[in-house]
Image 1 (cartoon, helix red, strand yellow):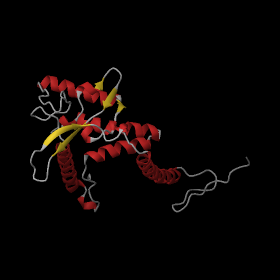
Image 2 (cartoon, rainbow, N blue to C red):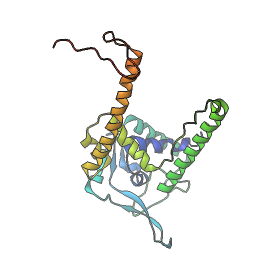
Image 3 (tube, rainbow, N blue to C red):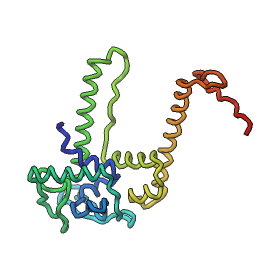
Image 4 (cartoon, rainbow, N blue to C red):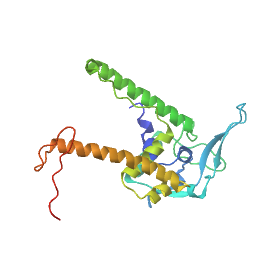
Length: 238
């Protein structure tokens, strides 16, 4: 309940794969609820020097032309954005910041300015810590005597959410070129590296699934399935 206010933001990140700087720069003007698309053509960047003087937030263009794109908006993302808009209307929240001529940002701080990447990463860290604490407490109450360790979440960052989206696209057998376009990768090889990694993991999972399936469903021909091997029936004449 404490972190529910972050839900729309994380849904958008997990279901679009947009970069953190693209998300924080997102304005209501960039969202087309009729065509169900999100236009990406600028980033929000925090710049400064080593002495931490003259620090400021600026709007920049994507590093490559491929970064300028439209991202399809799934029903889940659309609902999350509409929920965010409704909450802001009910709470009287409005964007009060103007950065390099840009305003009307979607995801706001309490002061009415756009959220920053470090703020999102801090929220992720707090959510993971709270979740792991709850899991550990439950484990101590119910399962500590079994000797099994509690299953906890690793440290998460904004980039993890983007990579998770990319991996899920690969697992869903989406076309690699479509994934590249949605993610705004300039280099096709970057997309393919993720695709190969995901498919390798899928192959391992499929083999385990196959093994488990035949353990539960002994073959009619060739006997039962042993723990150490699968006795496949001989193929009949083809």
